[in-house]
Length: 317
Image 1 (cartoon, one colour):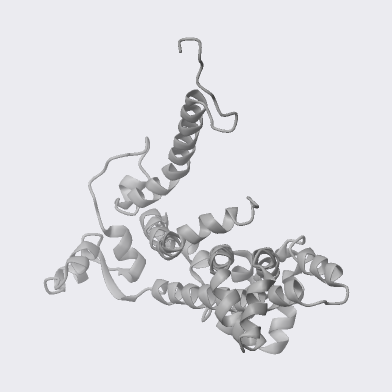
Image 2 (cartoon, helix red, strand yellow):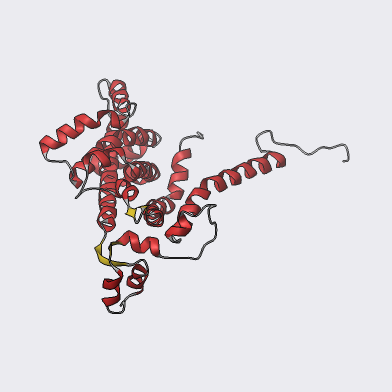
């Protein structure tokens, strides 16, 4: 028995390689998370602490950034400030310490709502249209299908900003400039090619026999698609929705060029938050933190589908 050796799998990683890879992953996670943690911490600093040099890692917590983000303020003379009655709220008191008064709400709430409507609206349309197109390419004999698929993919090869000027001129003629509908249509058009390519791969992995059995049992093609294919493709649909939403949520170039007021989203609005003497960094950090929350929540809720979707079809029986 002493001469026997334990079998070692050539596929399973060794203990040393697991530790090295684990250390690399942890290091990468720390490096990736540090900027986000710094932004989160800056949102709870005062303006003086945010621009202090050397930078202050720990500072007295303050909600000045969030108050400045959601309010519009006006600087007043000491005589006028002295004539005012006592502040009624904590944020009014915080603003008065800066020798300012609140004159109304800021535009961040409306810009944030625009991002929600445009981002999720375009994602829904892109995934909906992409699912239908991917199913058609996967199940039906379409003339020049490979050429059409390459044409769809080719729309992703050109940077979207390269066609920004023609789109701007077209939108101005159609009355779609600075409208939510125009931005939803634009982001849908950009994302639908990605949705078609991703979803076609998922649907190709679903055996046709499932649908054929359903249609033999009396289902129509549409019923088989809705009750058989869609549940099987839920993983791919969720993964595709995450990628489409990330693009629509973070897109900056089109939002700057095509919106300026009613339909402006949060990405072009946050960098122009100006405070006393320059950029209001706590307010910018607070807006960035709040802007990250929906996409993080959406991704976390669908994280299982995302992981399964990325590896779907990688291992074949």
